[in-house]
Length: 407
Image (cartoon, helix red, strand yellow):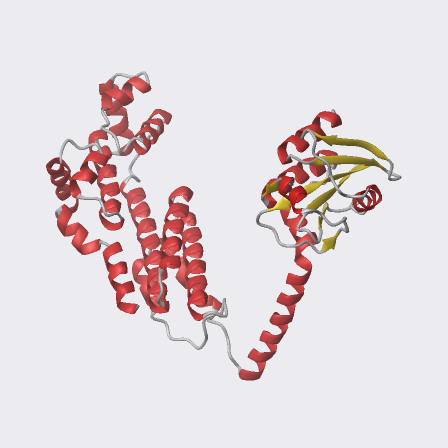
């Protein structure tokens, strides 16, 4: 292994110094790609800090001047990376004593995220060891001590309090039924699980009441998104919808409305799974499949905001348009033109519900020749007009109105 190159690369990435010490503490290398940059750490202190990492997880050292060093066991040697300033990190459990640093020097010290430092530390450690580690181990060893003690203390106190008062959380089997409803796309069963009568309390996830309700709603959205993925929803779709709901939850200022939006997310995931399962039922008669049809569908999904022609797709797949159309219908059970319009209308539904865009803007975004063309295809497939759909299903106006009501 070209260790010299590796250490220079780390020095360049973090704009700091990398020292290498032998097994007895003798310095083998001191590499700094930043011209003229000097550290204020005394050599004995650096050697001692590096040697402490030998045989274990990398150690992160904090100093009184908010400067950070990382020590890594590199097999027959040990490495010390730093100085650095972490833009998003708390103080480590391990302290390192350095001379008092003037502000002018501190301004020269490179500032990076914990993640950027951990990436380089893990690269070094995992290249020198067969048993690899992840950032979780680094966090647990260097930052977890006080937090774990506090959590265990509060856990013990909470268990004791619940035994004394007889209070309980909501029953787990009710949650299982709820998430099973999402996973199976069963809207009626989901509503029944919401209406169940049971003895139990919601968990308290923060000292602030509103924050606690937001945390509960975020947990609910997260669980529902995972259940929906298990039910057949594409992970990227489930994650994106989860992100949208969580951002909305963060904006709300009423516990009641937060709870309502969490339930709304749960219901939407259930509807999405139901739609997927219904499509599978409708296509159950299909006896053939073809990778070219899957390529065709992938092209359609990624070009819904454009005008899509069968000739374009056929050219991409090096097929005759008529042959591609016949193959698509035999595999999917519907003409390709209808499939494209169905998908564009599905996307239009989301834009009508969740975006402020006008009907003409939505038509242009989806590649329709006019608002009238979109309106005709939309009514043909849904039975109602664009205006009627937005009035019936729009979420954003309702949420904004409800939020204003609760202020």
